[in-house]
Length: 181
Image 1 (cartoon, rainbow, N blue to C red):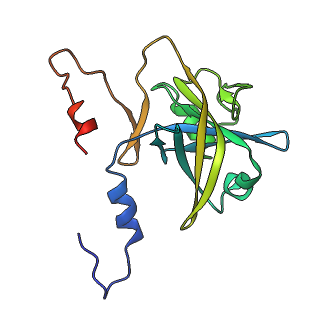
Image 2 (image 1 turned 120 degrees about the vertical axis):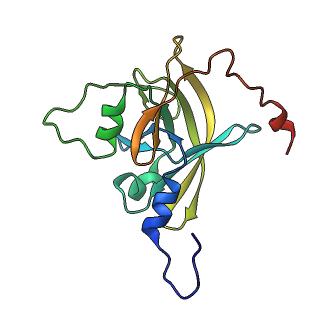
């Protein structure tokens, strides 16, 4: 699938192509002017180990995108495989009259979603332009993880899914890749 100079760029094909990449599902939370803001994001990644930096992207036209410059920090809440309802709710796609049950815990960087699989509390390091999105870079201040092992909620091909842990025969040592670049 190539894009020639004679044709306009096909944004739908671009979105479908990106949809083939499996991403984890997170809920980004921040507190601005005493109000908790939360949004579902799969545009989250680690950026640096030293210093510990992560980033997420937020659409400039979204409610969070319009106020993110007023935030001092945020938390990245990594969802468990059974938290699809929370992802849908914080993405704005919830159709039920009652919201799914959830609560927030006061925490470093931004409020933490109680019951998530893991979380990172961050101070905002910088916010960069990224087309129609803001690229929000955070310095990690705190880490949270549950004791129980639970598969994460993931998204691929326009659908929620999950991953299962590899069995003993399926485990592959990929540590050589870390030093290979």
